[in-house]
Amino acid sequence: MIPRYSRPDMVAIWEPEARFRIWFEIEAHATQKLADLGVVPQSAAKALWDWWETKPAIDVAAIDAIEAITKHDVIAFLDWVAQQVGPEARFMHQGMTSSDVLDTCLAVQLARASDILLADMDALLAAIKRRALEHKFTPTMGRSHGIHAEPTTFGVKLAQAYAEFARCRARLVAARADIATCAISGAVGTFANVDPQVEEYVAQQLGLSVEPVSTQVIPRDRHAMFFATLGVIASSIERLATEVRHLQRTEVLEAEEYFSPGQKGSSAMPHKRNPVLTENLTGLARMVRSAVTPALENVALWHERDISHSSVERYIGPDATVTLDFALARLTGVIDKLLVYPERMEKNLNRMGGLIHSQRILLALTQAGLTRDDSYRLVQRNAMKVWESDGGLSLLDLLKADADVSARLSNAELEGLFDLGYHFRHIDTIFTRVFG
Image (tube, rainbow, N blue to C red; front, side):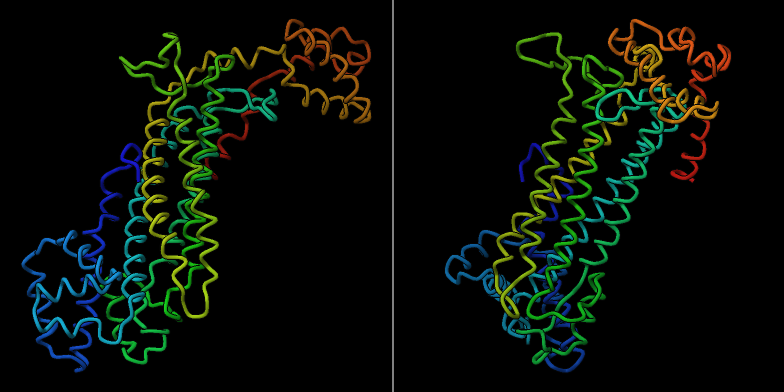
């Protein structure tokens, strides 16, 4: 985790003290249920909860010092708690294995991280919706291959982004449900030394579901799907960021990132206003996606368990969620303050002498009796003259002067085919589909 790209609430989930507090709750809830089942004394559970109610500080350094000797993090934690609680602490961890604590804790952390990410996505969706409605009928150039294609509206561009992030949100809801599972099943997952009721109780207390079959670990296909979902969200962030970057290019300049008073774009060139935020988002998206392949490779573990996944998850758990949290918040700010230039959009629409209406003319000629190939040829031979003049010529004028075209379409009919509003007849339908 890099502080420059981190926000405190998400970082807090992954702090060592927060992890140890979750570990304690897992152990104490398990001990409580074992006491209720008569496996351990009620005094053991009471001693743990009584100590916990004092709101004790977790001495991370002391636990680390024990681990330096034991070479085992869970044992180090249990030893430290025993030092604080006293003899009753010997009943902790009855019938459990380290993965019961580690995997259940990770599930809690990822679920809490998901809740922050879902709130982030709600804020982003709200910002996109507001700007989409604002520019619902703002005409702009639609491009394919980076080349002028046909007119659209800036609102439609943003409606597409809204629909995409709404899908991402739904995927994250599903991924959260999939990852939020509890395993308290013992050494190889057979419950040989711990009753399944303990697992059910701990899951209930922590807001998790029960893992149907854990070996010694929760199956890592769940984690793979979770991080893959984060990767997809990151790619959607990059898609919208890339659109903003293209629109901010000097030759286009239809929209740009907000440039605050006192901000400087270049150490050498005082005139520069660079799309630094969206370029940053492109880079951050790459880092989130870098977690996906290791998560997929974690699925295949030896037999009931090995720890080849452990070191990977210590990296990607914090890094991917912290980075994505920051990226979503940054993108929300970009969209919220995005500078939009309708006049420049109109100028670009008109730049190429009406070429953007070529399909309507093609279709009209076919309806007037020409074959599609002949219609295409007639339109293209005039369109290429406009293209080669860099928009200096008018497609409408050339078509009116083309005897083969004018034999099929009157001047009035041709002029009607250059109506910009024609392209926006179904904008309401699109917005209803997207926003309801």
